[in-house]
Image (tube, rainbow, N blue to C red; front, top):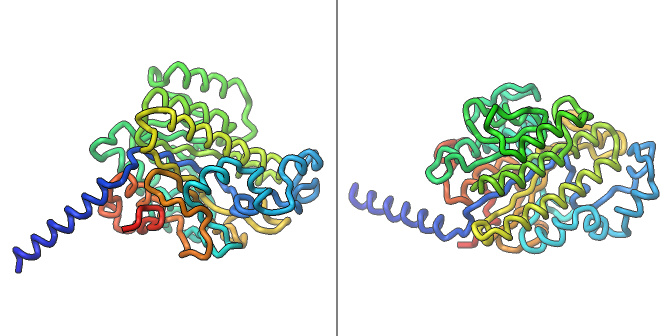
Length: 365
């Protein structure tokens, strides 16, 4: 009986190894834009916020001309052309609650640190109750991958928000990263990164704990050129900052830029032989926001609907099912194991609390 059980275990492990080997993904590009609502992703610009009173808009006519439309598909196409013309057509996108596709965070706080921890570690953590820059006690999937064979020194992060250094626990993980408002250690920055850091110092930031997203994008492009990472995480933050400031025009413009930048990153990796046909792109956010004209600027456990979440996946292993409708609900916690599985790794073996992966984004058995 023991011999039979051992043989079955070998066969099972061999089958799992074979399935992992069948995946074409060798590189991962993970992009987040902080606090960007599913409502804009799937409905486009909200006409009730494109005014001075509710949205702080300074030129409503210009904003309307750029982003308005008679139908949700027209509006969202104007706002996020890369996501809707490329990702949604060639990959999958989840979270349109109007179409019966539910996406939710599993933590009950609905703000940034708990959200980033959840999708990077695969589970909520009741110990994380604020956005204070406290080193994360949990090992993220990025840190774990960096310790796996073939990934050491090949997992990079470009951070808009300074607290991401603690969320990724850089002192323990030693992940190579760029973070706005931070200066690299002497001799560690490439000439291009050093120039970006000089520009950051010379250009005042509107916020105390992050700078403009353009710096993040330039750093991400440089990391691809200089280091050819296996995994690159890009964290944009302006969508959240402008929403908190009640500037719906700036919020939409920030999202529109992020969409264009994701397209630039995708075009870049598709132009490189080592990435072409072997890269999976995942786009998501850390939390939602309020759904009313009075509370769209805010989020957190007291703001209804701000635990609503969305994500999109594009890559050589993902069936092109497009915009998902009337499908099984997805959870933010599923992201960590999804990232690992695309690379043929089993993060849940090391972190049993992590949620299972998104099954539909992988080839059908």
